[in-house]
Image (cartoon, rainbow, N blue to C red; front, side, top):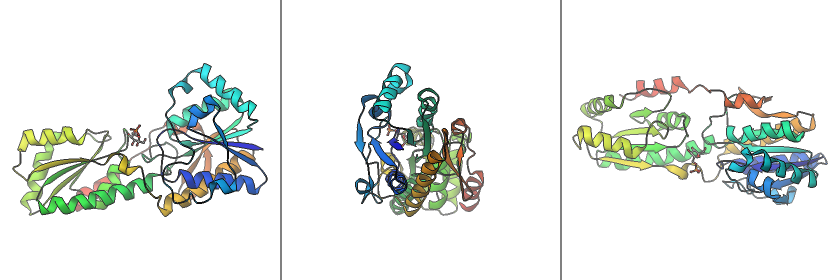
Length: 321
Ligand code: F6P
């Protein structure tokens, strides 16, 4: 059997360990593997590269993806998908494993229906927002990056007795904000899933400063509002009455860097399950993880709303006295 592998959408640290695992698991069972560069763009353009055991050596500790990634709008059009299917046929690829988030899985589902080959997804996104799976590759590393950065910000925030607004990624979800905020003891966490009125923030700052807190750190998910917008709002409402206000956007710093051991190990496990799924004749679906168990989930499940860890948010508010 010949298996194609591609990465699509935003890269996620841990994609390389997934690729290594797929290649080596498949090769060890006598199957061939080929990489497709730049995700769906490479499928459309026929950009295939040989990928065997040696080519995936020395990549466990590399962030990003050796296969490159892209967000390819053309894949939404049947005309371009048909071009991709011809390339798959010409290359004699029997099955595809696609690494990415729910957007990637929409394309994967279409391909499984239209091209008649087996397509298995591996959830990879720092946002951890794919429905139907508790974990997505890249999330742990993004959290490590965000926590390290916020810890550093706290040092300067305390020394200058400032109010700091730190914007984290997450698209329209607050997974990174909640866990990074709880782990760093942020005074306030703002997420798009909760309707926390901005008007209440000055009161929260006043309370914290009133009990002797040196700093006030707000971790805001990009989906709630931008750090700049919040900073301007606070300046308008309280000026520097409770300390100077500063805003930092962590941005893509969160997405890069050496994958954590969790992302490496989860990546290897996800990769193995994907290969086994293809070999056992699964036609379509993605590898999901829940409470220690890996299984194949319907692609449609990826679009479902995944509950935030409300307990973590509640705990952060309880502990931030
Ligand atoms: O989906 C991953 C992610 O990093 C989001 O958190 C963020 O909103 C988006 O991608 C940024 O996209 P880009 O890298 O295209 O600017």
